[in-house]
Image (cartoon, rainbow, N blue to C red; front, side):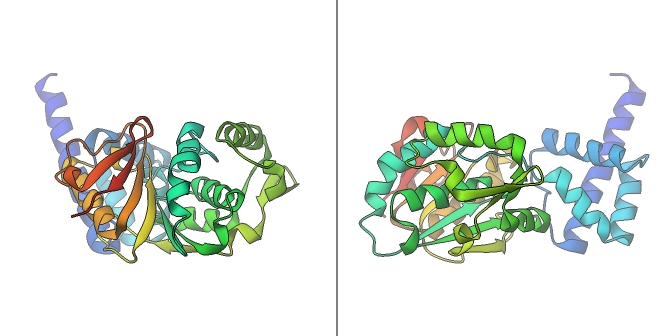
Length: 280
């Protein structure tokens, strides 16, 4: 890399730090401790899609046009998911975790970083099939309001249903997925009854606090975008949110191994990254 390229990289890094600081101070969305390589790639996509020459120009638009916030969040937050994504994870929940959850008279489940709702509906359907839905309150949270609105609608393109159906079957589904949705105009709309026991809420793992005691928390493929300090904050938040012997599920590429809170958890289903909170 020559001196001119190095200067350009350094200027971009300064611009990005200022942009993220502006996003936090003006709108209270904090991405300052996200993993830098992934963040820079997404910000470049946002800058280019908006037709702006520099990150400084993006910062100027962000500060002066509040509508830019939702557009930027669509780039900074991951909205790619599937119903029963990684079916073996949901099979492990069904076969290993659910028997423990049956022992509670009431349950609280937190889907942290619920995106557009696919994982939420996976859990509600699974709990309905296992006879636990009526005693469970589901919390679906995300920092992106547009994603929460999409989750609350529960409408997905019909061409995704085949994959959803296959995942459901491989997860040990005890019914037909078609029992839970209706189709029209090229889309599948999941039944509103699946949302009767769901609370949708804006919540940030970066800045917000514990809000309820949970029996199961599923936060998958979110912490891979955090730096180490932010990962520790999130795991500490989960520890503080879990009931005694509560369960935490992470994504396939995530781990508690290097967390300062690793000692607070035991591996419950190691291969599927499902942990159980240990007694103090």
